[in-house]
Length: 149
Length: 234
Image 1: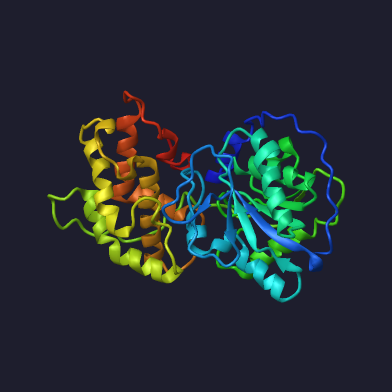
Image 2: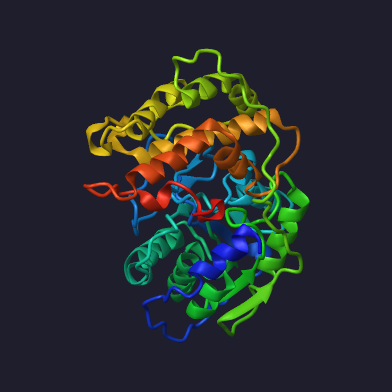
């Protein structure tokens, strides 16, 4: 078994602790007309601005920002991929290329990061998730790509 | 744990009218929560788009994800058609600098010796992940408190930079892994540089000794989970 398979098996049965209701899916515009934002749980940060463990908050980053670090303290995933290429976690350059070729309508002006190691989930669902949604809607976002770390 | 969070956030965004698609790193978690639209990517943890420095592959993942957007019934989980596995069992083969001064702790000497490799690594990748608390210049001195604890001083009487030993350890690990990138000329498989750090370097040995030293300490050391990855053994 690889290290990641072992890791998934160890944590996979941790209960969510939330009774999730049925989900209703929003209607997506044609991708070529959509404004797309990235929402990652990679704990992206400016250097010197660490994340608090078990935080439910999010941070917004402009589409042109560079030099972001992945500030997770968890040791249980590969870090060399992001060190080499942020797009393996935060595919901002791929989406910019898709914008330039017209495959997506627009790359959103701001993108969001949470920290993905937080155990308690209902606060994301009831508080910070809706708050982020309102901010992204204000930016005209109608499609979000979510990436886990 | 991150797949739980992205699935939950996807539900919150979708409820507010934003169509979502989530890349998934743990199918078992995703099936518990039920993302509106999720693409199960059996890739190494920490690489949700699969392959660094491979724009064509990353674009394939994005195309597969966005192809789910027209679906209006969920939760729905599709599977990406390619699997990538980590190589934690194959540490990178990187030279370790010799210890020139026996009066300097081995890990401190090693970190100093790796500085040219770190600089090459940063030049290669164009940025650094070092800098949460200390920058590259501060890495050798940031190692000393861990040496002191392994040498017998109680962890709570030692002064760690930023008073945050686990975050400092992430800076030290990033320094080493970027040095490894400066010593190799290819894209390493996932966890290969992690395994080099924890299994082949004096610093990795020091972190393991530190973990052993503090695991039953009083007061309890608060960051036990963040010292050594589960992938590097108990």
